[in-house]
Length: 189
Image 1 (cartoon, one colour):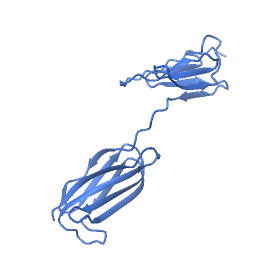
Image 2 (cartoon, helix red, strand yellow):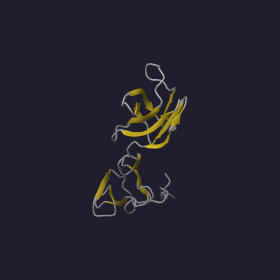
Image 3 (tube, helix red, strand yellow):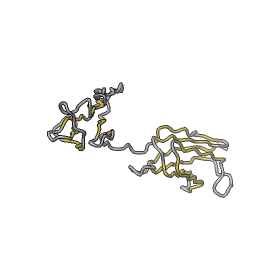
Image 4 (tube, one colour):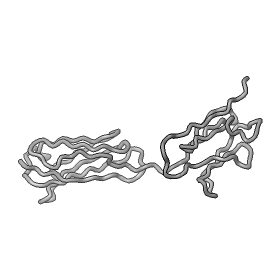
């Protein structure tokens, strides 16, 4: 069996605003500690394969310093990749394309920062507060799109004037609150 070749960590070319977590050998054999540069530990990896030389750095484990990921070989020769647990970003609307006026068909689109389990768009007449149209959907990966022909739920043409649209989406991963965005559209005829 050939001797292990030291692993070379991948270095990210993306600039980071703060230093990534780092991994250091634990005082206890078979462990590595994750730290954030302070005295507080962020986690411990146990079950590292023991190295014949030193602490095993570069032969049984290595660190991606740019991303803070630890790649290590377990005592059972299984390769693992451990990433620090960061908070997951909430669902956001990355881009909105919703015309502010319409004389006929209105087509709007919203791009999401992550998948949504469900969504709802409501269109409310600003003068009366009446909801004239509602669209709903489920399981969208990246965008919500609606088209409107200027009619109410019953199919009758709506009055000219100002309307407020509001989109609410629920994150598919269940992490974070619903996201909401709103705007206006003027029906001119």
